[in-house]
Image 1 (tube, rainbow, N blue to C red):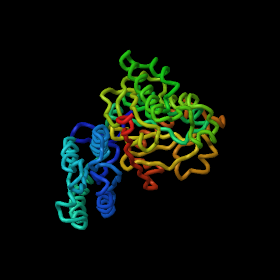
Image 2: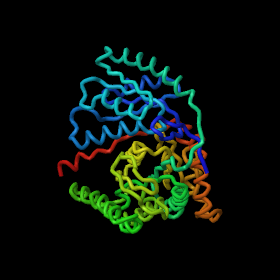
Image 3: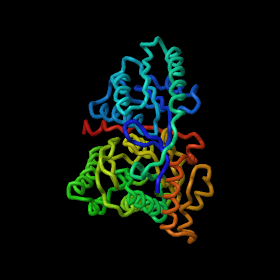
Image 4: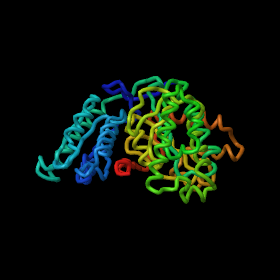
Length: 386
């Protein structure tokens, strides 16, 4: 099976062809947003980082995430907007994005003479970029070029029984076809890490799985966090313990061997099933995986969530037919038919795999239709001062 995508200069393949406008610093958020809003089809992100107050580890992670997100193959061209006095220089970010071979422009508000001039310049270059990338056409590619991000949020009992196991089937099918799936949310692996470690391709990967989970636990303990606590929505949805939630979460990874463990916003160096060390916060986790190269996201939810991503299509899957009926505007696939006795885990998983291909070919998800695009970078400040 193949998919239709956009070939980039670095050999990677996008399933979307966005013009992305990104600020290097919080102070440039409004300017970046106003540029994008005057360019039909352009997307933008805003964030609260980039000034001079970062500790070194956070600065490096924020920088890597911004460069990786804009370097994602779903981005055809990029405009970087800076203020001029920030610690995270827009020129450096633009230069590293340009290494992917895509068109990149850098606009610095203080250099061009204020926000009005910056917006005007951004709109001018943006129109040229849109004209340039609009001439690109989709080509046929092997599934080995596809990286799938796996996410769950607003989980309930049906997530681990229906939605996540079906996603696991779809993930296995992609891995069998030579593609890559990324399992995320380290805090939601607590209590089930030993099961994933058994599936590692070697001892080094097994040790890394245990290391990142134990590191997450240690950070929580140092901050006085009770790692056994569940979110109110999880409890209301019928989950009783973190271990129960973790066992359900792991089902998204199917049965494939774990080939690699990567840090937040790093691109996998191997194909197959990969674990990325991300937090349990949905938007921060998705941002890290997309910055790591994922072109498509599958997001399971029992309680329901409208979360999207500015540059990657997010396919919502629900194992609860009641929630699906209430939130059809936001949820793409009803895996509740498994619990209802209408379909099997394997059948829904195969249908989901086909949906992933269709979305990769250009079909819009519910989140895309609504224009939802959420972006947030996780911080590791606490780790430096514990």
